[in-house]
Image 1: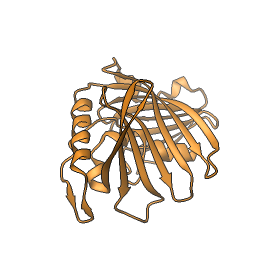
Image 2: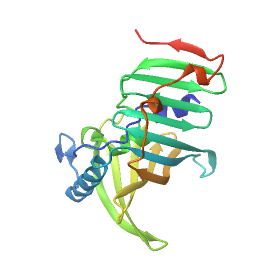
Image 3: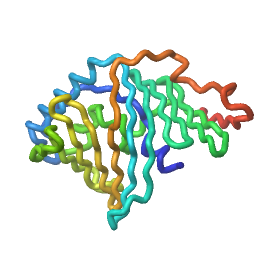
Amino acid sequence: MKLYACLLMGIALTASGYAQQMTPYGQSDPRAKALLDALSKQYKSYHSIKATFKLQVINPDGKVADQRTGQAILQGNAYHIQIGGQELISDGTTTWNYSKETNEVQINRYSPDNSLISPTRLFTNFYDQDFLYRLMPDTREKGKVFQHIEMTPFDKSKSFFRVDLTIDKAKKQIVKAEIYDKSGVRYIYSIVQFTPNVKVSNQTFTFNPKSHPGVNVVDLRT
């Protein structure tokens, strides 16, 4: 499950502004910036978010190597995500990574990793910090119009070379992100269900050892 832990770290489906079009690497598409600004405004208006998503791992031959469904509850920098037998939880200060298979939880200080792509980073201002982006032609499917943004990282040493976003034009919501790894593998995040402004308690964003009898606690905070 380490792969999924890495891909999903830094959960925080909150949005902030997308400023600064010109970078040392060139100029991003102003049409894409306008779209990202609209997404930012939409997500900043939400108090909290609950989302069900699907993660697919596609081999270079196009076959599905793995597929899992997960659920994320998010509020500010706090999050609680479940996928398979793994839970990733943070209250914005501390993070808990729990594995059901080993009945072990690892505790760390909260420190978002800007080198990773995860569902939560799709709505933050990391675009202008790390990517050039451009708007691609719209597509239509089952009566819906989808917009597409192609992003390429400034840092060419990263393991991936492209990220494609798919946005529901009417709802102004990101519904899919495809991450193209240099190995030929693709990681596809698809939003299955999206519910804004859900009621959550503070207990949602902490790990309760009493709910996991016999859990092995590994505290990595220093």
